[in-house]
Image 1: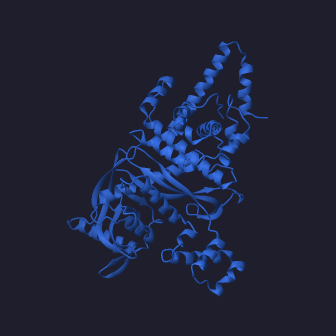
Image 2: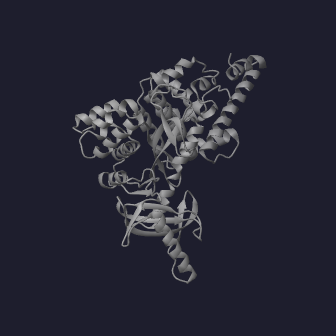
Image 3: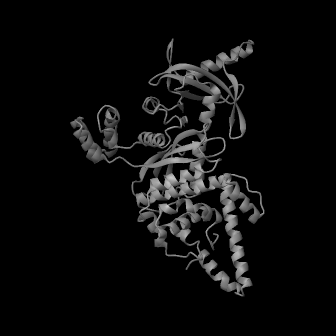
Length: 471
C-alpha cells in the first residue's frame, strides 16, 4: 500500500469541477475517497482511510460522506458528464453509440440492504449480488458510463396491493403459494405484472425490472440530449420485443440487438429457427463458392477504435416472430464460416451490414467498463446501506471518468510528462498506474524535503509506517 502525503495530481486537477456538489467538509472527503479508489489496493473505507498521512482523519468522516452527506447523485453525474463534454476527445460525437448492459456486484453473505440471490450466467450458478444496469457511451476515441442504476428486488406486498387496486384478479388457488412456495408466488405476481404493465395505468410503476430501468435511463438520455440521436446496442437478453418496440415507437431511437438462435424467422416456407436458417444460408454460400457463383456472405470491413476488422456478412430484411420487419445481419469472422454466427437485428431497414456491425461492436466497451470498474472498486464495498452503495458506485464512475479525461487532456498530460519524465499514452489502467507513480514521486519528494530540513529519517518515516501498518 502506498501512503499519500497529498492528493494525487489527477484529483487536484479535476476536483474543482465537483466542488459545488458538496459542502466544504464533504468536498475534502470526496477528494480523499476518489484518491483512495485510484491508489489503494484495498477499496474499502477502512483501506482508503489508512492511506493518508497529512490528511489523516477518523474513518467515520469517510463513512459520513456515503451515508449522511446531503449531496445529490444526479447533480454529481451531471458534473461528471460536463467535465467529459469539456474535452474534445471525450465529448459526445456524431458517430457515438449507446449500449445497455448489466453486471452482478457479488458479495459473500446476504447482509447487505436489497441484495438478492441472483443467477450468474457466466459461472452458471446462483450468488448473492446487487445488479447494476449501465447505459454506456462509446465512440472511436473514448467510452464511459453515461447513466446507471442499481436494480432492486420487487416488493411483493406492494406489487400485490397494486395489482388488486388496479382491478387485476389474483387466483385464489395461487394464494397458498405466498406461505408455502415464496419463489413461485413471486413468479406468479411478476407474470401478472408483465402481462398487464402496458395495459393498465400505474402497473408499470409497481416494479423497476432491468428492462424498465434501461428504458428509464434512455428516457433520461433523450431529455438531457434532445438533439443527439445515437443508436443503441444491446445483447440477446435485452433484445426483447417490448423493449425494441419502446425504442422504436416511443423514443424513435435506432437500435441494434443480438438475437438468440432459437428466435423464429418468418419465411415463405413457414417459421424457422434462426439457427436452422443460418445453417441453410451457410450451405448455400459454400455451394455457391464451389460452383463459382456469387457468395451469400459478403466480406465487409469496419473501423473500430483505430483498427479495421473483417467479417463475412449476410444482410437482408426479414420478418422476425414477435418483432415484425427487421434488418437481419448474420456475421462470421472466418472466411470458411466455421465459427459460430452472430445474428443481429435493427429497426433501420435501409442500413447495411457494415454500419450495423460497427454499431454492435461498440457494445463491447460496456463490458470492459464493468470489468475495469471492478478493479477500481465497483464491487469492493463493505457498505450495508443501499444509499451508501449507490454513492460508492457513482464515485467509482467519477474515478473512471477522470482517468478517461486524463487520456485526452493534453495540457494535463504534458505537465505530468515533464514531472515524471515518461511518455504518457495508454488505457484507463495505464493512467491509474501513472497516478500511483506520481503519488510515489510526491512521497519521495516529501522524504527528501524533510531530510533537507534536518529531520531524522526515522521521524519522517513514522507516520508513513503507521499508514501502512496501523495499530
